[in-house]
Length: 72
Image (cartoon, rainbow, N blue to C red; front, side, top):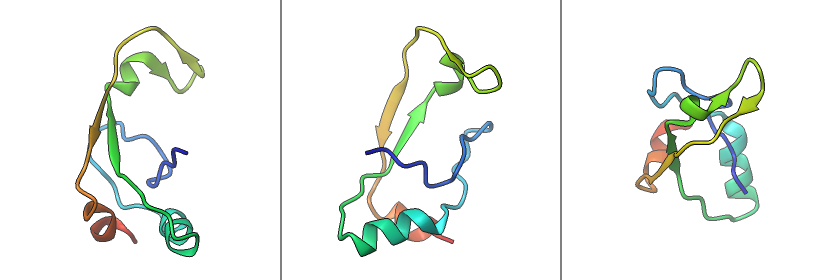
């Protein structure tokens, strides 16, 4: 399952604070979460048109502790 904890895609590439819903799900259901960054998604996904084109994206795994520091 993929959850966007920021609630949106970042136009700037900067990681924003995470919404509380992700933290609640992880804690209540005793789940393990692996934070990742999906890079270059805006090069293939046009949000305003809702279209996707062929391309390559990069997925980077982040340290697990970043989730605890980013929760609001």
